[in-house]
Image 1 (spheres, helix red, strand yellow):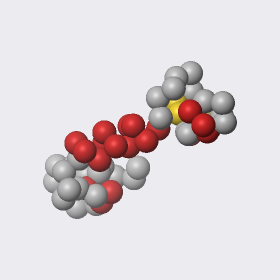
Image 2 (cartoon, one colour; image 1 turned 120 degrees about the vertical axis):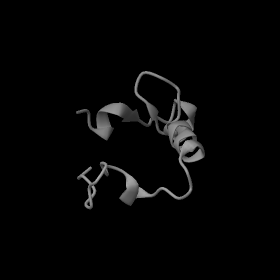
Image 3 (spheres, rainbow, N blue to C red; image 1 turned 90 degrees about the horizontal axis):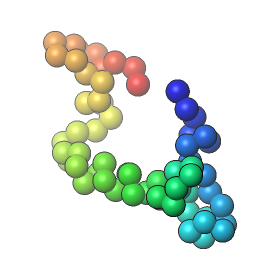
Length: 60
């Protein structure tokens, strides 16, 4: 699994230092904004990783 340091890059010459995905000019914030707009407001980190019939969420 790739670490954030290998996936996200910040350079003052690229979009004024905004963190972007390596090899692109796509800001990381774009993905976060998309995720937040498509995730139901009732969901939080505790709802991620649960399986049917499971009382404990899986480790993320």
